[in-house]
Image (tube, rainbow, N blue to C red; front, top):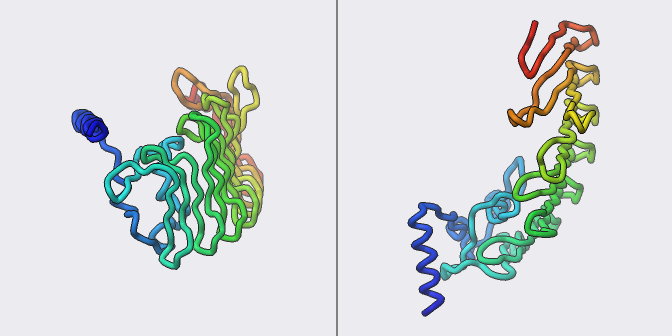
Length: 245
């Protein structure tokens, strides 16, 4: 009786603030089994459980068929009977979990080292690494994405408190850089920014600075632009993000 009263008070508090966690049971009933098409996003994989992970910004909860917050180990399965998901829950939220492709290969693994920091490892169907992501207080701190051929696709690295970037680079599938944004002076927060053509030649380059008061990275000094043959097409000069000429 005391337990019921406590739950009722919590429910009233939610109603008074107008904030509700999405009832995950409406999307993944305990008795249902799934086809791969139902649970797999073509671009991002099996992400339906991400919303239950507070450590990466999730704001939903999982409920049992009786309407209680899910507790302990929970499992979901494909129609074929193969395991889809195994996670440890506390008060409806995932603490650690693994998702699986229907072929049995792990699709992703989420672990948490402490209440503020956690990690997600994501894989392709053949077991090759797709992404490694470190989180800090629900935000991405570091992320490394890979093409199916194993070459890097995207790299982002921030300082430990995510106050500024160390680098943010993208790559073409052949491994050559598409864009590069890297810190060259930590004290002044000076960065070099470069864009590239697919043939490997530079497209544009210049300097940027982090303006903490603006919460933005802004162009500064001389910027140079090139055609695909490497010829300079124009130059520009900036000050605090404003074009001067």
